[in-house]
Image (cartoon, rainbow, N blue to C red; front, side, top):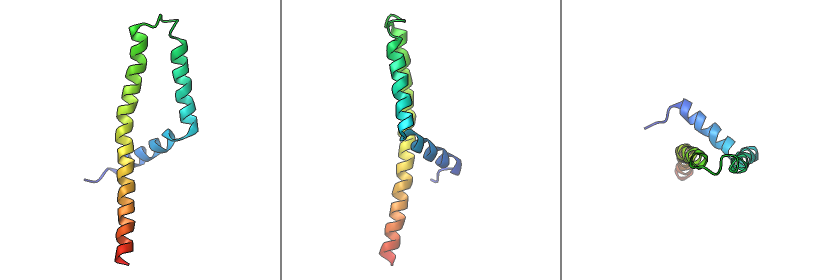
Length: 87
């Protein structure tokens, strides 16, 4: 089954953005802000739930985006190998 072009483009852009140093720094800052606010919220269950829910959602979505990117890369490599074998 072929992936719609719109999703393939979106997945490529997100995968590229996720691998940039800026994205890592932004994530690190977000985690530090969350950690610093711990005492403010008394390290409550809700405070913990925010980071747990956020990381779970991001992880879940990234699995599919990265898998899509890997599938396309694998198909491109296979096409190149087929071309070499035929030559």
